[in-house]
Length: 466
Image: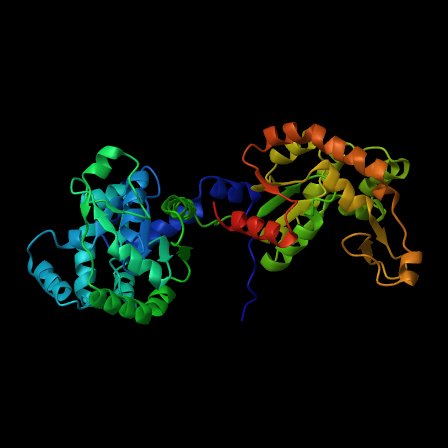
C-alpha cells in the first residue's frame, strides 16, 4: 500500500477559512443537502446562503410545571424565533392533528412517526425557515427524539429544565394565565412586572394530583433515554431559582456556538497569575503545543545558530531583545508541523509593538485571555516562592511549605522572585494593560484570584465556544 502523504494547508488559506467560518458553513450546507435532498440543489444553496445569520434551533425539555413555556416564550421574543408548542402543531383539522389530539385527551404519548410528521409540517413553513424555532415541551420519549433526528430535525441547543418534585407540585397549584397573551405566571414564582397584566390574570389550567403524578412518572421513566439522544448538545439548568436567573442562564447557553477553529491561545497577565499552570492544563487536555516564550528564547540562545548568538548577546547583559528577533524566533516555532494542531502561548512580551506585530502574522491568536490579579496577590504568590536545588521542586512558604526542616534549610529564592523585581514586573504589565487591551479588544478577562480549577473551567468553556 502506498504511503499516505500529508498535505500541509498554507497558513493564509487556514486564516481565510477561519475568519469566514468556512468549516461551519460547509458543514451546514452539506447537512442540509443530504437531509432535505432538494430537487434544485443550487437554488436551495443560494437561498440558504442568503439567510442573514445562523438561525436558532432550540429544544426545551423538562417535567410538567418546571417553567418550559415561560422560558421558551421569552427566548422566542429575544431571538425573534418561532415558538412551537404541542398545541400549535394541531392548529388545523387534518387527519394527523385529529389523531394527535385523541392521544393527548387519553393522556397517551403521540406515536413517534405521527409527531415527526406534525413537526416537519410546522417547521417547513416560511416563518420557521426565515426566523428559526424554539420547540417547547414537544418530546416525551427517546423514540420521538430519534424519529426527529432521522428526519433531519436537529436542534443546535437542547435546554433541560429540572426542579425537585415538591417544587413542581407547588407550581402546578399556583398557575395563573394572561388571557390576552397566553403567558403563564405564578402567584409565588413568576409575577408580572406590570400592574395592568397582573389585574387581568385568571387561574390557569391546573393538573389534578393524579394526572400530575402520572406525567411525572412518565417523565422519570423517559428522561434518561431522551437526554442521551441529545448528549452532545444538551445542558441541564436548575429551575428551582428565580425565573430571571434561569432565563439569563438559558439565554447565555443558546447564544453560544461550537468553536470549530484550531486553538491559538495567548495568555496574558502579571507574574503569579497562573499562566504557566493553565497552559499546561489546556495543552494536556486538548493536545495543544505549550510555548513559553521566555524558555523558547533561552533555548534558541544556547543552540549555537546565528539567530541564537544574537539573542544570547542580549540575554547575557540583561537587555531587552529586539522585537524583530523575538518575532523571528516565534514564527519559526509556530511554523513547525506540531503547531498545526493548535498552541498556547504564554510569557510573551507585554510590549505593545510585539503584540501588534504578532497580530499581523498568520499566527495571530484567536483566543486571548487576560488573567487578572491584584498587585498585592501577585507579590504574595511570587515573592514567597523558593526552589529546592536538589530536587528542583518549588515551594511556597504559605500555600505549599517545604515538607521538612532539612528541605527548608536548602531552599533558594531566584533573584527574579525578590519582592522588588516582582513589583517592577507587575507595574510594567499594568502600564501596558490598556495598550494590550486595545490590540486585543475581544480578549476575555478572567479573575485569576479564584482557585486554579475554577479559572481552568472558565478558560475551557471560552475555548470551546464562540
